[in-house]
Amino acid sequence: MMSVKRVMSGVLVLLLWVLAFAEPSLASSAAHSGPSIGTILPVWTIIPFVGILLSIALCPLMVPHFWHSHFGKLSAFWAVVFAVPFLFAYQGVAVYEIIHIYLIDYFPFIILLLGLFTISGGIVVRGSIKGTPLMNTIMLLIGTILASWVGTTGAAMVMIRPILRANKNRVKKVHVICFFIFLVANIGGSLTPLGDPPLFLGFIHNVPFFWVTKAILPHMLLASIILLVLFFFFDTYHYRKEKDHIKEGEPEEEKVPLKIEGLYNFLLLGGVIGLVLMSGYWKAGHFNVLGVHVQYQNLLRDVGILLLGVISLVVTPKSLREANEFSWFPIVEVAKLFAGIFMTIIPALAILKAGSDGALAGLIAMVKDPYHYFWVTGILSSFLDNAPTYLTFFNLALGKLGLTEAMVPAALAVKAVTANPVFISYLKAISVGAVFMGANTYIGNAPNFMVKSIAEEAGINMPSFFGFMIKYSIPILIPIFIVVTFIFF
Image (cartoon, rainbow, N blue to C red; front, side, top):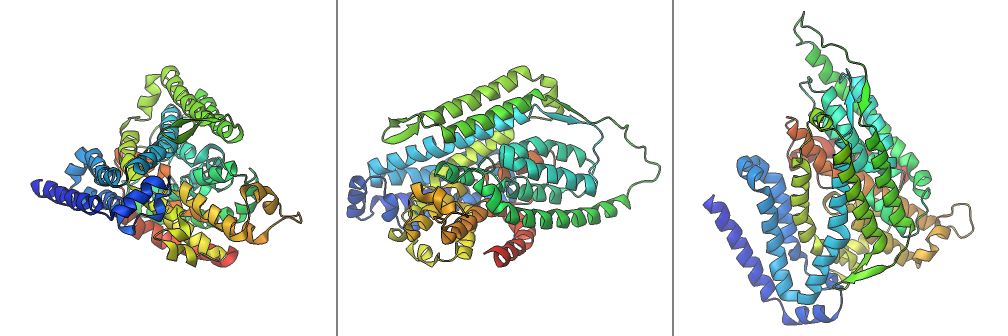
């Protein structure tokens, strides 16, 4: 334990020294240039972000007991490693960036997750649902369809417990959860701005609500059908092997009629969706918090979601949550880890937003064709927050074509003379990349890590961060994305 602490202390001292003695002109120019810190920060400032990712990937394997007890402290450590020298070197600009990412990104993110997690935890699906390959495929299909209309987070939180309950007696079930992450927590959310945060960002930046539905439907159908067929055969293989080992004469469980309890929680989920839509349509102005513009409609949305969560806690009988084996640990784990991730991600996002003026100018310059937008947006969305990554390349595409946000609806009107086919192809690629490739890692999209945490709490030994990529996302998803590239981009 002491060696771990010494390593941490050494890294902290090293980074403090490097940033504290950064070229004075950089800090000076940052202090007078407003929130354009991305033009100044060097690439190595993402080291704490890499550190927290490696901690999430390696610590559960190398020091599982330490990780389980201290993951929040480790997340805070990497946040401090970045924040202290960042504040020391860049002062006012650093304060702005930190307040901005927490007020505008982290708190709405965690409030939405908390609301959906709390409300969905009061919905219980009872009955004799047996996790056969056909039933599992049907449940994945239902979750995939739901995701575009109640959000990937909402669909994942509603469907994960029935999936776990149906497969409680299955021996091999890790693959069920991994395909659930692919379909329900990511690709299923492609068809409306309600489905995934990047698409919602597009909606509030003038992309018409149902443009996504028409534009992305072929891509979503292709990827979903391939994944569902693969899953069915994969699950059938394991199911048949397990049936061979079932003891003859073993008594069957008593059949219980299918019944859904806590249905009123669906009304509360509808309330969450309504509040999210309201925050996109209604422009009520803003107030300032140390230079950060906080929109009144967004504040109302977040307060409303919290109230709906409280209502769910009050009106839902405790017995329903007990039947769901509901606990607060998954949301606490996500809140603590993503608090650190959002802090350390600041330089990566700022450098990306700086475009050709930032340290990743070479990467930005390489993005020219639709398939470039698809893969670069997608790969970055696998590790960074996919919402700002989407917005970065959305603005890059506008800039390259000389368009403004006001021109977006006309440029996307396919049958109009104002349509811009190049921008349409770019935006399709950006949208599909941001949503689909969030499935590549546990941190690529908000519900991924929560689904993993809930599954582990149910006793499923989920693969590690890299294990998920090596065993599942890379061999299964990447070939599908290559097919999508050749057909559409």
